[in-house]
Image (cartoon, rainbow, N blue to C red):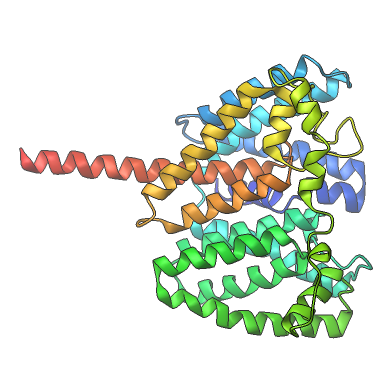
Length: 372
């Protein structure tokens, strides 16, 4: 079972189906995609069955059902994506329940390291790197989500290693979302322990490493040039920093949302499947394609994760950090239902909360028994 779990984790968290498609062609990509679902199904069949993830199942039912009413693409493609997603949620959630903090940390760390390997061995003229994840912003999410997991790791050596690797790899993606969340998480970490202020000191070492990589391979990235200018106390215009802002992309879709707020415009219209450009925002994608009902339910789900994570901040501060990483990243990405590691990230947080709830309930019951 452990072997099946690790193979499944590698396929999902390393984004191997999409990477295989890009690197080796459609045959490999398709085989890895179906292989992911097949291995998860085998794992589910052999594992003891527990409570399914009703939150995401109901959200997905509403989203796919309503958005399908106005879908004018190939029906076979839609049905395959629908079936694969539900199998992933049902089977993958069972596997998620058996993934420890350390296991999640190790797999995310390996995935993040692929960013550095690309930067060193496959230098790009574009100057942004993504490793297994093909998209630099997505790779930035993997790095910041992994960085959040660090605060649930007890081994100090692993913590320091993770802080250095996830931060350096995240910076190599040159994702502004990564930098903003990284700063926010480290500010929150000071409430956990004032000793966490050391990461700001480690930041100088990380920046020096980034400069070294730039000297060796030439990062050739405008955002890195801006970062160096800021470090050298040189003037950088706000227009340069906000160039290619996501808010400009969102604005292009507002009118379409208001035209059909109840049932949306149909599957694929906001996620780039039927148009050249997507909305780059999961929340807007859901309301834009399927209307207000699944959108409100999804907001309730994210709010639930936030509220419960906050109540368990003392016991598990990393959960609120992971929630921030996920929910803010969803503002810049519209692939929650197609990038399985996105759904996996949400389900892992959800089950971690469920475990803490169960432990708290058991403690209360034990206390009542003692009092009697």
